[in-house]
Amino acid sequence: MSDTRIEKDSLGEVEVPASAYYGAQTERARRNFPVSGIPLPDRFIAAVALIKGEAAAVNEELGIVPPEVAKAILQAVREIGEGKLAGQFPLDVFQTGSATSTNMNANEVISNRAIEILGGQIGSKKPVHPNDHVNAGQSSNDVIPTAIHVSAYLAIVEILEPGLKLLAESLERKAKELDPVVKIGRTHLQDAVPVRLGQEFGGYAQQVRYALDRLVAVKPRLAELPLGGTAVGTGLNTPPEFAPKVIARLAKRTGCPFAAAPNRFEAMAGKDAAVETSGALKTIAASLTKIANDIRWLASGPRCGIGEISIPSLQPGSSIMPGKVNPVIPESVLMVAAQVFGNDTTITVAGMSGVFELNVMMPLIAYNLLQSIEILGNAARLLAEKCVDGIEANVERCEELVEKSLAMVTSLVPKIGYDAAAEIAKESVKTGKTVRELCRERKVLPEDELREALDPWGQTEGGIHAGGGAGG
Image (spheres, rainbow, N blue to C red):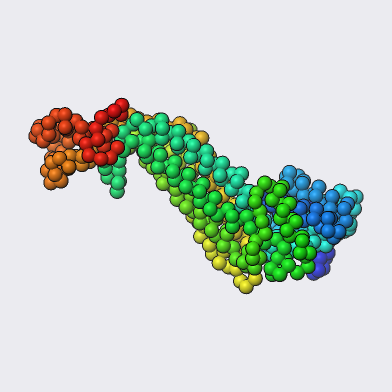
């Protein structure tokens, strides 16, 4: 038996691998774009297939596709969703800007598998035609942007939001657990007045809660689908009722509030919703950068760094230095954030590449947007489970740094004035004595007032001389 078969398209005959479910147009694109070896994500392909399946059901209802053909198409679509046709979508991300090649890849795979299900010959286009049946009522130009929105929305719901919720909850628990621990604050990488570990971690938790709010804000535009616009937004060659019915089925199938775009010309020619979503992802990445960086700095050491907290030891940190353990999870998060920043730039450039009635960088948008969503979700989950959950305070170290800090003198300013307080700070630097020791030597305040003014806990509660300790 030959290892290839001959298929035909509008340009003529093409040799296709005999075992492939894809056909002539996919094979041409596979040969035309050997650029990166990076295919479009499985999640995106699944979204394209999902659209094809719901379209087949509606086309059967409208009398456009025979019932037996629609049934076979739906089975093929289910198999794609289950991963049974993995390897049949080989096309490079860097292909035609409309992703027509990927749309036809899906049409051909679904068509040939449906033909096989019905007992026909793969490659014959009978009794299931990739264009006339699988692509009925559709165009690459409305299917691909619809798939971008569907796949991105589902990825946010299934990966990113759960990861961020897990991280927010972990940080909130840690904030409560560590709240009794007073440590030195830092501004400009220099010692500042005291703060509680719980207050720091509460700030991190709030950043993550705002990250979730940002996703809520962008999701309504992402839920708008341009399906039904066909080639340029006018809806040529599709019944008026086709798209509303397909979109309603997509919403029911996924449980997501998908709706028809109020203006299909905007939704097909512009990719502002994707750019907006990427902007939210960039902001989330910036938040995670702040959190991960703080954690690794606070855990630096263990002997010669800040060392106010300890994070879980997950793996040896050096091939040459025995006993060294690195903050591997925060570092991973930082790299994820860097990738998201780069993806956002790419999506921005791609998003402004709508020319007249069509954006011509849609595969690039799909790939980068989905990657950002998925890696951010995974990074947030790992940061929670493998780092934050296991953080412990090094209480003695925190107390030591607070007592040695020059910034302790700040709480004396309302009593003795800025200049007198500054002189004590200078003397502390010169002699190595603590602020407390110098204040006692100089008898700047009665002992009870001094104790209240220099009470670290009280300084974390604001106000003037807010003493009383953790229990008071």
